[in-house]
Length: 170
Image (cartoon, rainbow, N blue to C red; front, side, top):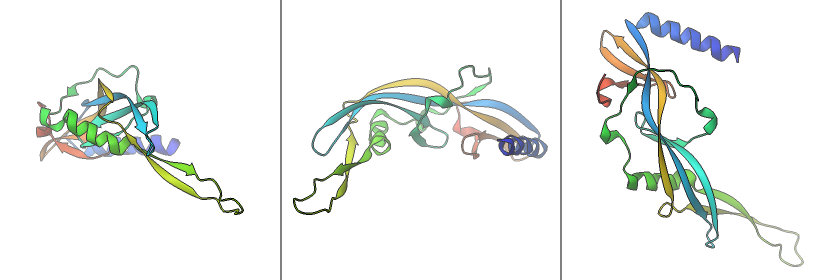
C-alpha cells in the first residue's frame, strides 16, 4: 500500500512540474443498473442484477463494483462528454451480452461401468431484450492539464489523455 501512495505522490509532483497548471475535475460517466436474466442452452432462466460503468472518454463498458463508489464526492468541475460519445440503447444492449454472459460447468453423468466423467462448459447468454436498464449519473476523477501544446484531460482510471474537444466545454 505504501508503494501505491508514494507512486501517486511522485506522479502528481511530476505532472505538476511538467504542466503550467493542473486542475482536478470530474469526467462525466454513467452507471447502468441492470435487472435481467441469463439463459442456459436448455432455456433455463436465472434472474440477476448487475452494474456496468459506461465510460464515454475511453469508449468502454465494463462491470462495475459498488465498492468503487465514493459516497461523498468532492465538489469539482464536471466535464460533460459530447452527446455522440454515449452508446445508443441498441448498442448498449448488444455490448451487455458480451459483458454479462458466462460460461458454466455442466457435469455429465458417468457412463455405467466407466470411471470417466466429462465436464463441459455451457454458455449462459444474457437476455438483453427483456432486461430493464436504469441509468445513474456518475463521474470519474481526472485532471485538466494546461501545457504549451494546449489543454488536455487526464483520465484517472486508464492514465490516458484526451483532447478537450471530446467534451461539451472546457
